[in-house]
Image 1 (cartoon, helix red, strand yellow):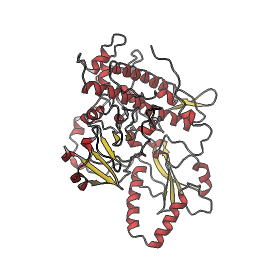
Image 2: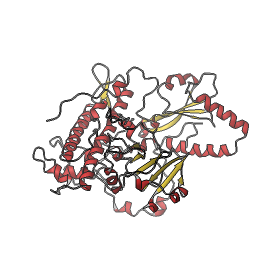
Image 3: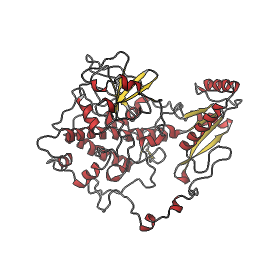
Image 4: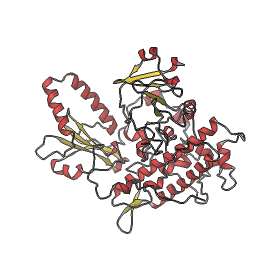
Length: 484
């Protein structure tokens, strides 16, 4: 068993895993332990905080099952396939802004369907005593109006991400039924389609089984979880189940913690420690791609208004385009030819952006260039650069006498939202600076330039948006009556 144990060390901290070959890209801070007196832990309430790998929490056994790259397509989830630039917002009679009516209706219908599935899948199933279900998407505000378009879009996207929460707990119950089957041996799909009160169309359930909610294969990578070896979990038997379905599990070993019965098999031997893999933190998250937001030109699949489950009558409900024989016989020389850049706008002069280069590729290329510059940097140049970095830490707006340049990544409507790096004049910096925050501003000390890029964190709140408080984005959990 120990021969398959992977050991990772970084700055004196040690992790082990049987099914992960590297550490997560981002390790969140170690949370406070479960408080049995208060029956609470420090698990995050906001769905945005759990879209990446989290620690194991007593109240959230479904956290590890959040998909890392959810694809919003097909008959079930296509209505969620939107980015910050494509999500439709409309005005209300009182001058506020809200998610467009048809999309609200589709989201509300999908939410009701998934909550119904959650209830049926949970029937007669074990769930941890202190376990808590995720908040419903409507609790995040997509049904409410807001003071401006930007805030309405961010609230809508955060609500969209909440569908991943209720999908994850449905996955949890599906996984449990697969791993610990009941005597009646009915499948989870049969459970949904054969319900006497509300039988769900088999075609819709089949489509659901092909999504990140019902697909338990390796084709749907999940965030996994980090376990603190100093503490146990009331649902520690689920860890074996997660490993069976190849959900990544890491165990953190604080100093002077001895192996106990629960995590004994994860305890590294002296040989394991000697051969430990040294790795670094903070791998690239990939911006929007981390959440798997797709940029299809037509993300909206037509749904029948007569069927509340949205089953489609066409032979191919996934909307996949068939490939012709010509495309299958494309010669290799054509595949290896230069890419067609005619669908991309020309970059702005002196922006440093290449033709067809998106913001992620630009930042990656610049990071490689900076690494080469650092290798040849003189002590005096390094001192000056580090001084610029320290001055930029507070994100103070550059003054008109400053030599710092500011660039804003602006989406081009005529090119499907492709972003161009655009230089902002000193007079114009004040007008755009407050539209961003510390998550969406990047300072490059080598070039002495700021980049303002909303795509770095589309759902974050800009510094200048102080007209509505956090309760408008994340209101207190409402008290609702149980559904009949």
